[in-house]
Amino acid sequence: MKKISCTLLLILLLICNPLFGQNDSNSSKFTLSAGLSYNTLYWEPYDLLNLETLLLKRNNLWLQPNIQISYGLNILELGNESNIGISVFTGYNSFGGKSKTEDSGYKDYYVFHSVEYGLKPFYSHNQYCGFLGIKSQYIFSAKSKAYGSFSQDSTEPREWSETNVSSQFKNSSFSLGITNAA
Image (cartoon, rainbow, N blue to C red; front, side, top):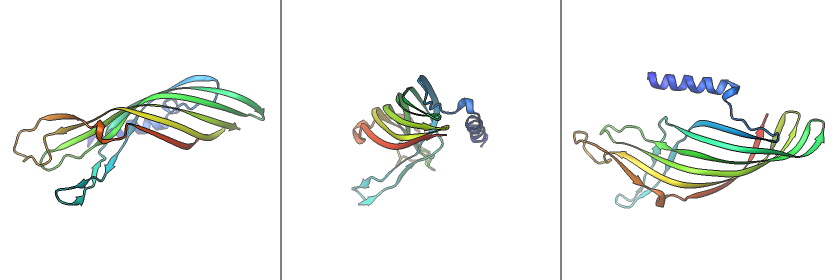
């Protein structure tokens, strides 16, 4: 409990302090953003032996690193503190999910390592900035690490084993979204 309390206090302090916030500048310069993210992983595989759909949840607290570098370029100054520009970015992102520890002692986690790149055109007016953003992501590594096996008895000794699960997941994604910054 003490570990969770300390982690939540650290997260709260980082969120409240603007020095540690994500820098999404719309001026002509390079910016660097680094942080930690909390992700969850849910999926529903079909069990051919029992002929049922399983719900697998990996949602325990697990902070993972990410880093992004971007370059913002003002294209057109419109006056009245308004401009149009574009921000290009690339970065590294680690995400996945961690299971709870079962009564038998089994636990596992999935981790995905990816490279992201994209662009965010923007319209800025009086401290408000927003438009559409485009991002592509390539997952170069997907691994699962398990402590024993799910069906193993709690009295049997357990060891960590790592499995490459890249073939079970798509290795790329593309997304389009609305971006804004006040």
